[in-house]
Image (cartoon, rainbow, N blue to C red; front, side, top):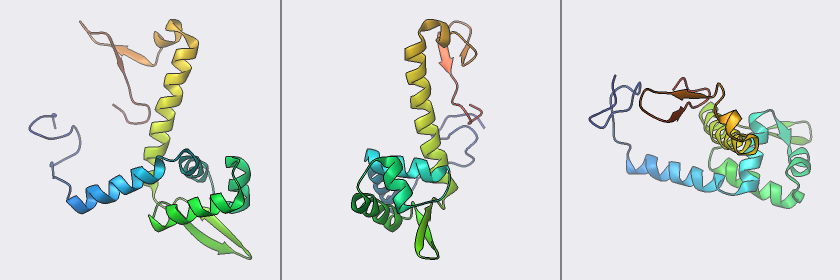
Length: 143
């Protein structure tokens, strides 16, 4: 399917999201706007952890990390399960993991390109179209 008439390539039939869906998405993005919470989700995207391990890796105080986890859990971005006396946290929604990994991966790649200079930018990560400058490909999207 070609992009046009309000559609998105490969997205199937275009359907306007409801106000409720847009509101929930805005809340989720708002929660992820805090660097500490984004770091927590990034870590949990790579494996389950308890609050002590998260606090150590994020570099935050245990109560602060616990508060971040509570907010993420209330929003449905993070889940937990009891393992003996410990509460183990994980990201239960693969979509959230995909969005976080895509955004951080793209920004990390841009940072690396800036550090490496022009010779990196002219490597295999860019594709040139006839009559145009370099076109960036989104890693992991097939685009």
